Amino acid sequence: MAITALPPDTDADIARVTEALAMITPRWNVRIMLALSGPPLRYSELAARVPWLQNGQLHPKLKSLCDAGLVERTEHTARQVTYGHTDRGAALLPVLPVIVAWAEEHLEKPDRPLPAIEQVEDSLILLTRRHAAALLWVLKQRGEVSGRALARMVMPGSDWTNVYPPLRQLVADGLVDTDGIGRPYRLSAAGDGLGPVLGALSAWSAGQPLSKAGQHPVWGHPQVMPAPKGWVSNQSRPTWRNRDLFSHATPARPVAAVPAGGPRR
Image (cartoon, rainbow, N blue to C red; front, side, top):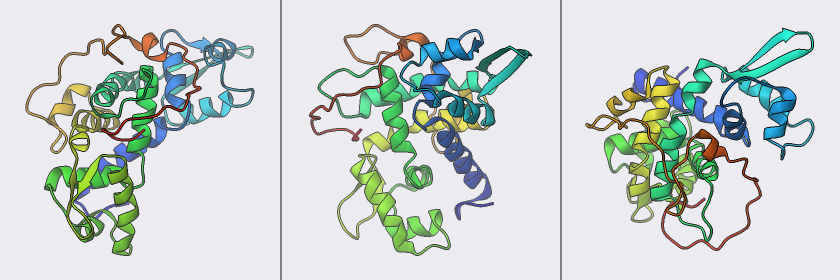
């Protein structure tokens, strides 16, 4: 079923990316995926890696990840059950450094350095705003677009003024710019910089290798994506691998005064 008035291939691409974001953005999902890096774990072993999840919280999270096809539950015997990544879940992990790279360049800088996992979580929240994937797609492809035209393409069948709340949110988030009421909308530098992120999510959601992200018709770029490497979550930290990204960091986050500049967290 079409979700936009854009061509079928485009509509399907936006729908896949939106669905992918819906799988991984809910709280703790990425941390659970990272905790499962490596050999399959028993429930008790996994629970020890995510100690901030209270009793009763982990099981429904695991069930939703299994239902999404990212985690596999294997029953070895009636008393031994393990959880591990599916091939699709494992293929998702290399997308996370791409998100961190964007966050390091474009998200506003807090008073304290954030662990890379928090960079991922903050970025995902911005991308899962209502209609965000479709609005960003159209603005990337067409440059400056009026609110009415965006509504016609992204929200067919709805009152065209309904496009303004999500647009205002994207402007507040620092991903979209406009010169004022009644003026066209365009991607900000941060919004435009999402190309590698949305290209990678598109490739992954379509079951393609991440090397295909650079060939995306809108989010792609002429050069081939570089080979995966360590990414730096702030200048004072060493490069990290999956375990560094996770680091069993406490999810507690003190409130910090944030200077202007960059999309808001």
